Image (cartoon, rainbow, N blue to C red):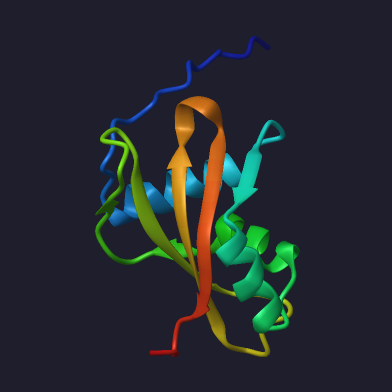
Length: 117
């Protein structure tokens, strides 16, 4: 039995919500993932009694429901990934993330409750 090698296809951004869901999940599940956090995101995680594992869970299993938002870097966009997590007390969290598929990198900008104004 021979295995077919499928080259990694890097879709140009901005992605539609369904594509963003797939791509962010793919990056989050990669063994070569580079995950960085803004200080604000770390503060928000602590304030909500969450852990970094909750953020990673949301990135691996969540959904993007809205269109991409622009960032200061023209080729990258930010997305809102939503999911319930093991430590979120049956509430969904929203992770604002900038993905870079070519570098297998996710930058977490902030974390919030979905039902929070």
